[in-house]
Amino acid sequence: MLKRLNTIRYTYIRSLLYGLFLTNITLLAILLSIFVLFQPAWLNATSIFLTVILYIILGVFISIYVGFKSSGDMKDRMDYLSVLITQLSRGNYTSRVYFSEEDEIARIGNELNELGEKLQSQVKSLQRMADEKSEYAKTAHKAATIEERQRLARDLHDAVSQQLFALTMMSQATLRLFDSDPSQAREQLEEITATALKAQTEMRALLLHLRPIDLSGQPLKKGVQELVDELRQKCQINFHLHMEEVELSGTAEEHLFRIVQESLSNTLRHANASEVTIEIIERNKELFIHIADNGAGFDLHTDQRKKMSYGLKTMRERCEEIGGTFAIRSQLGAGTHIDIRIPL
Image (cartoon, rainbow, N blue to C red):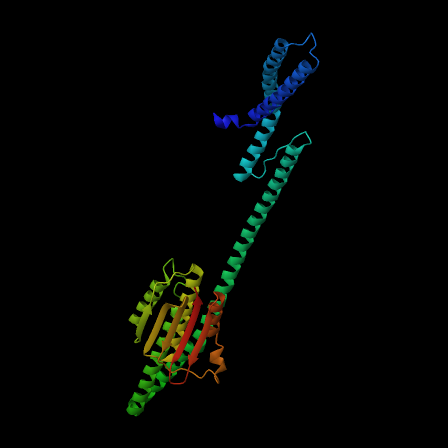
């Protein structure tokens, strides 16, 4: 009931009744002043009382009638605006409202129409941007896939293919020496075995890149654990893991997983290591990742090719993309250490 009394229609009626009240007070004051000052014969207390009562009764009926009549058009126009706002809030940006009058309500209606046009234009722009983003993502994914295939092809040609060719040539030479010089044939067989093991390690490192490149919704700790468990079954390397659960965005976890994957691939291919340590811990509001091996290592000051290799460059770029810092320490015969810090 109180809610209905607060509508525009009843507000109109209340304003008219308030005007009626003020008019009655003014009329009563004028009549009483005339009666007191001049005391005319035609004016007495009874006529004053009847005049005021009749004015009040007629005024109330007229106020209610005029209030309902004059507020009807205003209420309808406000309802039109309310419906338009509801349609805009539901995403129907093609809705419009038009008034023939030229007043404040018509101005508000025109502004809402302009707002609907702008929202409709923005929706079209967002849809176009989403389509362009999707096409760009497809193109970028295709380019990245081609680049990765080309890199794997180069690695296969430069390493495994040459090693297999060397194995073929050495095997043929060993067969010819088998009867005439068994001792030399034995030495070549040992060399063939070492080359085959090296080619096998190289292939394992390359196959590591063919694993799924995402975590498939898994946390970083679990993804790294599964990766290490897989390598333990295939490689004679002793892994030491110290990992904590840390809350990161999906993008950051994907980048860090790829960094660990690339680091382990480099260890398999180049380090000839027997032990690898991986630490993923939170320290002083930072995520600290330490990856170390006891392999051959290299000289960062003299071996610029190694320092700027594709793998290390990619790892550094991935780290910087998520706001982290990347540092590498290595020395001949002392292994390689990678330290990554990501602000939390």
